[in-house]
Amino acid sequence: MDNYGFYLSTLSLRGKGKKNAEVTFYQGLNLISGASNTGKTFIFQCIDFIFGGRDVPKNIDERKGYDIVLLELRTYDGRILTLRRNLTDKKMYIYECEINEIDNIVPVEIKSQHDKEDPDNVSTILLDICKAPYKNVVKNKQGITVSFSFRDFVHISMLSEKRIIDSISPIYPEDSMYTNTKSQSAFRTIMTGKDDTFYSENKQKNDVKLGAKAKLEIVENMILDTRISIEEISRELEGENFNIDDFEREITSLKNQITDKSSTLDTLQMERNSKWMNLQNIKSEKMLLSESVKRFKLLRKNYESDLERLDFIEEAIFFTEQLVDIKCPVCDNPFKPEEVDVKNGVLAEFKKTRMQLGDLISTILETQEKEHIMSSEINIIKSELQKIDQIIEEELQPMLYEFKNKIENVMNLRDKFKMIEFNKEKLKELIKNQEELTDQIKAKKAKVEFSNDVNQNSLKLFSQIVQDILIDWQLEEVVNVEFDEVKKDIIINGKDKEGFGKGYASILNSAFVVGVLKYAIKLGLPHPKIIILDSPLTTYKEKDVKEDTNDQKVKEEVKNAFFESLNKYQEKVQFIILENIEPKKEIQKKINYYRFTRNESIGRYGFIPVNS
Image (cartoon, rainbow, N blue to C red; front, side, top):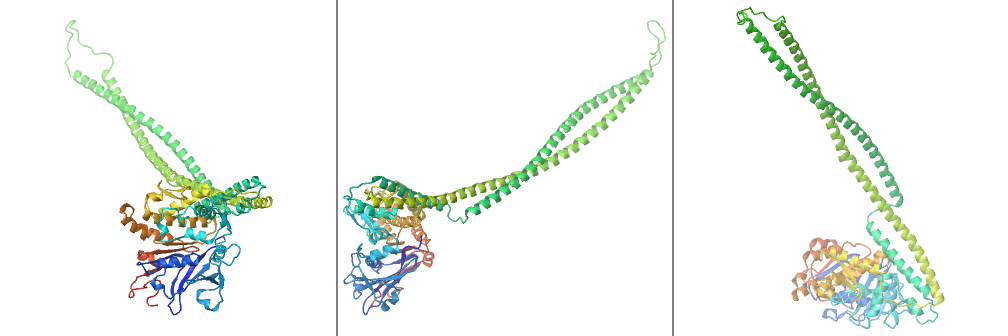
């Protein structure tokens, strides 16, 4: 449901013998900037006049000789209409054609004010285009109702140079306690899609059936909550082009990839475990060899010590043999050596020990060689383990982690899509239930109690939308928006609008009405889809300078962000900004831009041609 609403295409001021004063508008952002007294505010007044405003545009000198205002508008379902209103008698007409073809068409006179008894009025025509079926809203606390008119949309979508700096909420067209209840009722209707028709029809009935009414209130709140839930989830899923089948295929694919990679991981883990066990065995053997080498080296020292001792004995025997035979000084008998051949025994032991030492040295060398080979094997296995660990840690595990995250994300997205489908089915049932209860109320003539409250979830969503807008406009580094239900206005970082001053109010009021537009579009609620602002940035700067509140002076980046943000909406929405300031060249190229110079020799003088 996005084909409701319309956009302005041409505004024309005409008079006999006068040059037509015209500006052309398009969908998206339109900006008219320039010097003061060039007709920018006059353009605002002409549009407001065509939309059923009571006041004739200001009678400036340049307007002399002009007697009619024409406004061509194009609906989003393909219609082209031209509205005409006389500046003299305020009469109004409609042409079912483009503005350039009106001379070939007989116009139909219509009323400029809303009339629920006569559909031939500009308000009913524009409400029908907006697909707004609203009829009655409560006017005062006594419960008197009046018709909902297109002017109720105008008040929340067009801010004049005076209203844009008001400290009161933009929902109030004027600061008057006598119109507050009606303004609140109209705002509630716009934000909930529910008017006060039932209350108007049944407030005098005696056969009160509050059960059906109470159920209807619950169902209507559930409908709004469900719509908000669908919108919030859709907002999270913005840019996702999957459907449920795509999700299931993606989940199956990811599960298969996880299984494949898990199998590879298991194989590598088994290989790693085998190599690790082999490594431990080799290390144990090497440790035993190292210990053996230590003991062999100790035994070698013993053999070498024995050889030194035997060598000493052999040398002693040699020197003993050189001695002269002598007699015993006691018995005088000659010395006779022992029967045992000491020399031969020493030589035999010497030879045996040398042989054992040689065998030991060979054994040590062989053992050390084995130890060296094992060290090489250990290094090779360590290198292989390192490669396996690297594959596991740097490839498989991150890949599995990524796959698991992906499958978790996809499953979350799938669940959200399922939740949207569930909520849509739930919404159908609730709407059906709402219709049944509505029929019951009509049949039983149940009394409907009056309430001007807006659902809390609606206000929370609206506050979030306005907060996102102000962040997008770079107004403050940190922005927190809440809704004051008493003042029916936004609170910024715990501070109401009055605490910021008039200059700041122009930005906040602008964000408020843009927020209402975005809110209505998100929930599919009726809205003209047009926002017209007179001096949202210039006022901000000038007021801050005069009041010496330099900390609130508009920054260049805020102005640029303001235009860049509004320019994001290219289709089925229209912004018309009237400003004194000139945006940077990059922005001018992207938007529909007029520059009024008030200089006949440079560019366009203003809205109304000079010497026309």
